[in-house]
Amino acid sequence: MISKYWTSPETTGINRLPMLNIEHLEKISLDGIWRFQLLASPTDTSHKKWSKIEVPGLWTMQPHSQIFFDKPIYTN
Image (tube, rainbow, N blue to C red; front, side):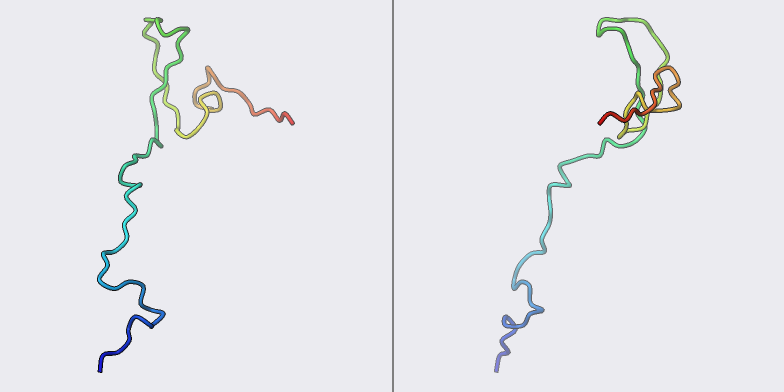
């Protein structure tokens, strides 16, 4: 006699491929260290030194970029 395995709570699928979330395959992480350069305008051709910033993060809040560093301000 064939058991009724489909009535068992442990059975989650019969003749089914394992589930796969493909959304993570179509994305890349942008986190990490980025090179950053603040210019006066898009047409500025000066060759200033590039800084390194951590992403995610605010470029104005990165303490190692002393040129731009701001302290957080509570504004409620």
